[in-house]
Length: 377
Image 1 (cartoon, one colour):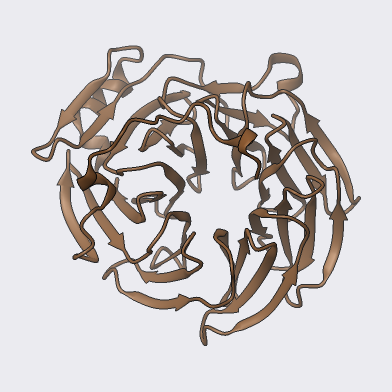
Image 2 (cartoon, rainbow, N blue to C red):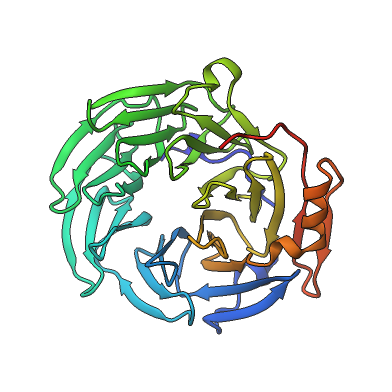
């Protein structure tokens, strides 16, 4: 990716030497964070770029610039498997092929790899053009999509064999930052540094939706609700937007905007299964929880020492996972977060000033809201 895409909005405060070199002596921690239990996983030697819950929230999959993928046990924090030796460059994303115990990885070495999660062996590798910024697996386990900075292209491959099925060059006018299948395995959404959003249809093999200048800066990530109705986009303009891609209502009234949640560029987003909660991560080192219907932020989790690169939420909505440039993965237990006084108050009184909960370690969980019309899910 060219230097022109370096994030101009990311916070660049100098960190102490102690912050630059966090203590790696403990693989697994547990400590209270303003009533939010926190668990820290240490195992990667470089920036962690991707994190996902899998196997009914009992396992965690993470990928890193250190060229490895780690498969974790959520309960114990144990590393069950480390996948390495398959990439010569930083891994940009990882995802699980449903029901097949396979992991797909994309890398800056221009390849997409498929791994057997039982043996740790490489099943196939495919060379694509250019640096691969993202990958996604369809929910039916048939397809792999990957996004390349060469010709700003989108690739669709067979998940079983790696065979290239579709190649869409010039899909965007600048680097494709992220791609994501909907839960119906019918569309691939892609977002770009050109500030556009596109939906590519797997049946008609055409772009069925194109939204230009959706944000005022690079769009970094996107995610769908389970029913495929809403697409959320995260941007370096520090906002997230919700698009009703099924009804197209945004054409007349615009997208719903979630703002004033982060002080740095937003890097990632993920919906809860019932789409009632959205979680986002940003370069301001924070993770935010949003009430989707009310369109307001309910909680901010602080603790990472560097950019938050990816986020996910467990299917039972009890846990949020975040990965960071600080080489760690953090598990936040939000099961009881509704009982935090500041969260309850923000539910009752939209528009009140932020409420800050301070801990002995000077980490902060912050609850706030800004009144907006309710979103109909």
